[in-house]
Length: 481
Image (cartoon, rainbow, N blue to C red; front, top):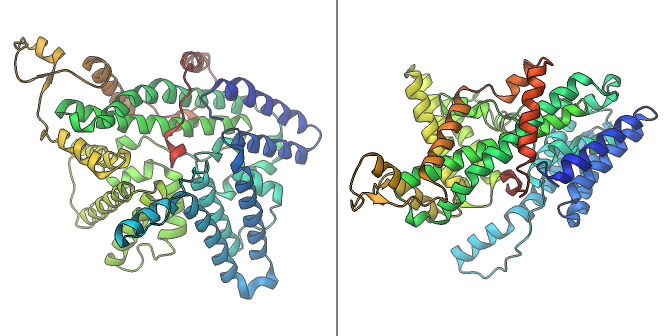
């Protein structure tokens, strides 16, 4: 089940919400059990065959976390933690990377290891990281007092289960215990509807429009020329942002309906003035996890400049691998790692740059790097990049030719090929750029929220217009990662 569907909006969410608050009047434990059951139903709606997998993962990780908290296991804690991490990494590796490794071994050593063509379980990348973080904190003695119901609800709470934000146990589990959260809170409810509506609009109206042009462009990468090459790349750049941040907004909004405050995951990343700033704004919870549980344990920036740069590259290599089983994801991650090292060295040397030039370089680097992230292989990525550099020709759309009164027989004419008129795509790209640069983001709306009639009208218009566009339900991009 996905957020942008009639089943979720008009059936699942209202029913789960209503019964949850009704049960809280009699038994808080029963209410949490109901919410857990609803979350597992939400997860299993897409593919019930993977319910046993997430249940087994929950049970094993809770038992390992409990063992790490027992004093009589003190001498064996490192071994228990190692076993727990290997279990999670092994589970993720088997389902997500088995075929990737098999293909590369077959290619390098002329082997014939059969591929399994495994269907990637929903959310495995997200709940694996959440549970690894929990085990590490259990090893540090920071998770005492949690019971199995609280733990399972922390991992499976449906707003953040499928594609994040990646939540930390301290951010969520205590909120489920607070008495004041057991009653419907009108302020949180109104704010939740606003943020959910903003996310729904981002996904259904904006991201899905850009998806048409991005998908068409990448499907015909060899035929792209300069103008439609840039529009293809920019369409995906905006599609990914509005799609993923839209999901995060809907997750945060749905959580607020239950009085649960989920962490922010995006904060206007395309306003970033350098690549480090970008990663403080993009997929914030992933960056936080990698920093806390990998970068700092590796030594962070405490062991000299060279070691710091190596640690940064390791982090971005892991980020690339986490996002997908393919060399293009690794290339994307290493591009960001190298750019982060350069940005850090630039600052250490005391250099500075004009604000708008810094933004222009950062945005265009991110846009170019997304080409590798989106492309199924290097050949496709290179075709798109060749078109963007003009190596496939620099031609003008018919609308531009007519506006400049150039004869239609001119060799600079080409038929725009992304499925809509050149003017429409250009208008959307310009609108997307204005939104990401100048509009107040959803987190600012959340933090500055005041219940007013104008805000209610704004939320209503966004929600109603988005619902009218739900004829064709589309999955979120990060479901694939």
